[in-house]
Image (cartoon, rainbow, N blue to C red; front, side, top):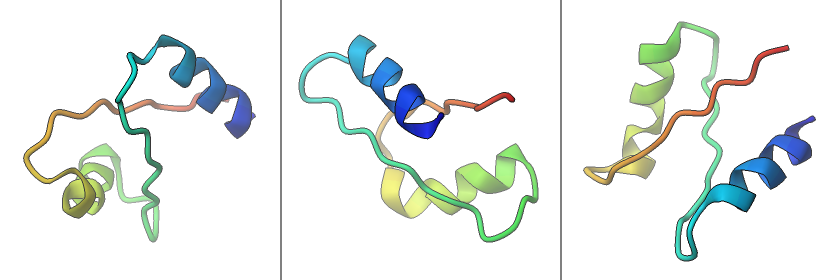
Length: 53
């Protein structure tokens, strides 16, 4: 499932776009997950892809 999602995201991204995965230590909500990614994101634009089951 994860590899399929990654392949789908990569297929629509323009060349030069970096895709990375950042994990939360524990599930504390969407806002918290974005804060966990802040060191990797910095002040750069970003997209959140939510996986639904």
